[in-house]
Length: 496
Ligand code: AHR
Image (cartoon, rainbow, N blue to C red; front, side):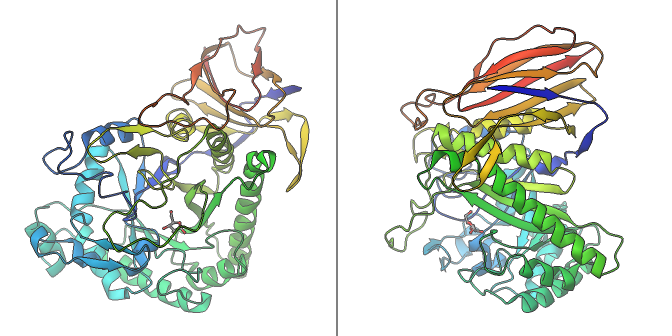
């Protein structure tokens, strides 16, 4: 098949926000315990954090990490996780049927985030938690000192405030599975009061209200309209979440980008409807703070233990390609999606996988995420694309190849991300950059393979990884490349 992409400097979508390259760490399964924290591990540092994990996290250049949940959040009392460890209570976590030892709380996670080079996207409990708890947490984390909670933080070892700027007001409160689930009107009222109280404590913070947990919710997008009508003038972002899984039709699965694109467009439309109704001049931004591939199989009930092996997804090359399509969609909506968090980072539906007392490795989805995080920063351009459509059972006609093009003015570079979703046909792709001065291709990788079910494991950590692909000379600003069937491609150009 033949594909043509013409990139024009002045056709811009928007600038990528630094927070588009975020992730998520929840007290869930082995994400914290034997994930980031394992004091008995040979690579543990003086805090008990696994330095082998920190190294892989740092290589991703993650901007912010959502913490501590997730469903866990809605039955978590953050006050259990501060002070001397020996005094902290062990609690039942009813969201994930686990025992939470509270060895890690906000103080330890803050230390870890500094070592990993990221900011925290904080979250307050709107399930069992109160408006008071939410305000107290902001006071503990961000108030300089001289009050009960800020002085307690200082006593607990952190003189300087954490300056956590972004805060989620609850998690997936539209879901019947959520501890303390609320109806839209009730959540809208509670969220509004929490935001007012939190912003009265620290006026510099930005807040994210819970939009729909997925586009499949019966209440979508009505939930979003109702809660935005309550909070529009007070909040800064609307949160949305979406996971995809392969239900047996690879072409449908590879076209998940198409549904994600529609979800974002409908969510933007809902925000803009409320903007008009509220006669507001403010434009609401989206926080896509959970996105990934996830096979949500029902598991056998497990005993009450700490760090059970749950949600331990082992990602295939096919999953990584689908994930790449989702990443392209996020980049192409960078004008309105300002925060995004791949869910999650370690061991549960994760980019990185660890084994207790053993090593860790990069899952297949690590690579497309790393690519967009390292090379996807700048101005996203809207190229003119001529591409063949393919017919899918679920979505009808969708483009067979999808692109995102990012212009990094500081570095004088253009990056083309391309996903060829055809499993059988290569794409003879012409990339036209003649609108720019002189250009030279200097970097090109592809993630592909004959076995789409290939996965990395501790024994074979490199079964799936990107490889260098041939560089192509410019023909007056035109570059002809072959994008292999079922491939994720990163092609970079220098502008002179
Ligand atoms: O990321 C796993 C879970 O998915 C989160 O805890 C929840 O918010 C979502 O349903």
